[in-house]
Length: 94
Image (cartoon, rainbow, N blue to C red; front, side):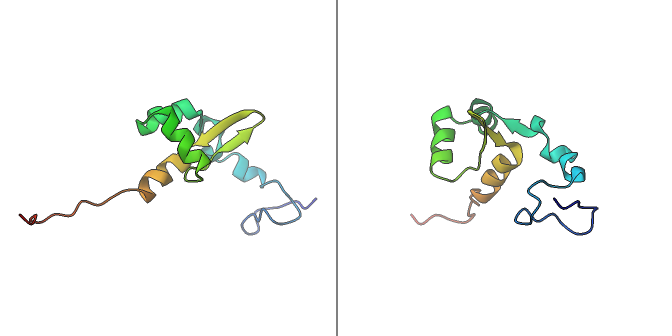
């Protein structure tokens, strides 16, 4: 096992499968940011079915923790940003 001492970014494909402890203490990576599918649906204001479809279609990242499925809040935010549509302003053809 390799011990990382903050010398460069963590590479998950390296010999050490675990991130450095400093990353584990990062508040953005904590379990409080992990939501159930039901909570994710509420967060996005869509149905549970929509969230499950997005997950099964590969459009929304998720994490399996044993039998439980969790969605990181940052992944929900990224989904929203990626799928944001800009409204075009101007005159409509009549």
